[in-house]
Amino acid sequence: MIPVGAVIAGCTVGAGVAMLINELAWPAPALGPALQRLNHPAPPSPQMLSADRDERWGAWLVEHLAGLPGVRIPRKDLALVGQSPGRFLLTKVALAGAGLLLPPVATIPFLLLGLPFYLPAVVGLLFAALLWFAPDLALRDQARRAREEFAHAMAAYLDLVALRRAGNTSAEQAMEQAAEVGEGWAFDRIQEALTRSRVDKVPHWESLQRLTTELDLPVLDDVAAIMRQSSDDGASVYATLRSRAKNLRTELLADQATEANADSEKMTAPGAFLAVLVMLLIAFPAVIRILNT
Image (tube, rainbow, N blue to C red; front, top):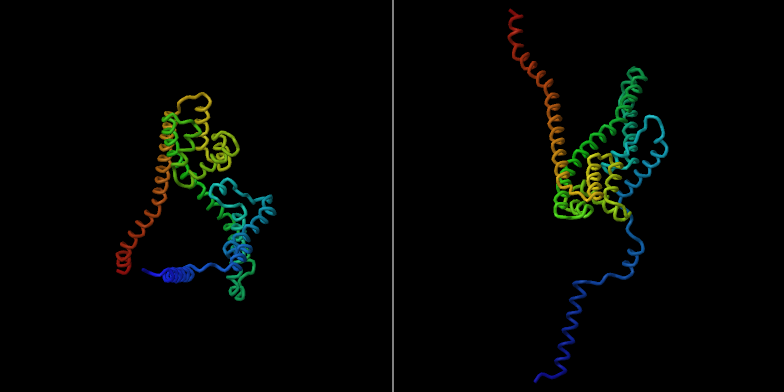
């Protein structure tokens, strides 16, 4: 029979070994540094500081330059692509300043050789004007592509809403469920609008109309009008939604075909120029031989 004292001693030793292993494997954090980190959070990263500084400078530019002639801020396009007006205007000013200063700095050696001093200034003004409007052109193209992508997403959204309505789902529930099924930034914007409508206690189609006005998305207004009609008179809009989705796809395909034809026509002139150049290169030796004889 094992003595009771030996059992107690063995249990005590085992408990001590277990506590030692636990302390070495998972050491408890020091209380002082933990409380210091809790009360004094980590400083922001350099990227966050740079972004905040750019936003502050951009806000100052918007406040002081927004009302001047020639300074136009396309707020709808900026809201569509997710860019702030301050950062947009800061980019314009930075590019214009670089275009204004680069030619004079680059032509300093030529100025020493007798180049007229006013020529770099004129070139700098031209570069500044071109670079000032460059962000507008880039934003316009980006917004156009975003609206085209949104139209493709809306064609799928119309079909999803129609399927939900065919299952005897209410208009607002059909819009919410269809938005949850889809993926992408377009469906995220629709989900945000529908969530805002629940918070504001307004119908979903009113939020979609508000989003249409904010982002200049006429295709979204069709959905709002159809769903409002469905809610007002209780009519089944399955056929209407499917028909609108089909028409929208047809319009998108027609626009893509038109764009492809335009790109093909743009390639006609370079192709003809290359063909003429090849013909001249082939005929050049024969012409030289005839002239030398």
